[in-house]
Image 1 (cartoon, rainbow, N blue to C red):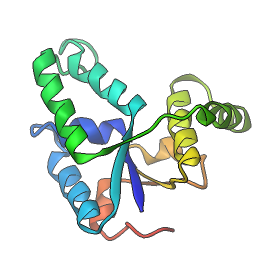
Image 2 (image 1 turned 90 degrees about the horizontal axis):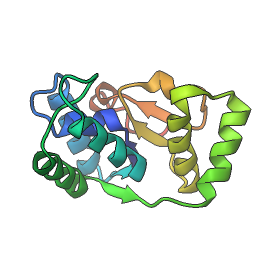
Image 3 (image 1 turned 90 degrees about the vertical axis):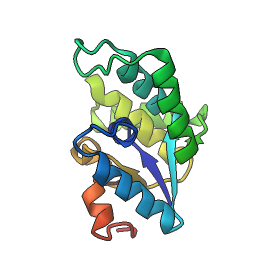
Length: 154
């Protein structure tokens, strides 16, 4: 099975000081050891770079140099396969936002769901499963659920 790694997962996976680093690292290793494929999207990589290079005094910014952000980006590239963008994702995204009344910042989550749909994916590792609860065909798991054996399709 393929799992999409959400941005919050990526950020903590490569930040050893992050509160959830060990749990996330364990969950990703467990998925890979069970022959699941962990993937990420171009959008997640953009969001990752944004947070990494945003000034530390700005909301949520890490304030990393480009070199340090690049090193972390390369680590993510070694761990996760990049899910290719698809022109078909736009029409799926548009249907999702209209059908579900999505607005504001959650349009980005709808874009991830659209991309997952295009690629036949149903599972997502995230820190914010409630952001995806409106999409009944998506199984959004937190790292603790992976550790507890929640890797099977529901």
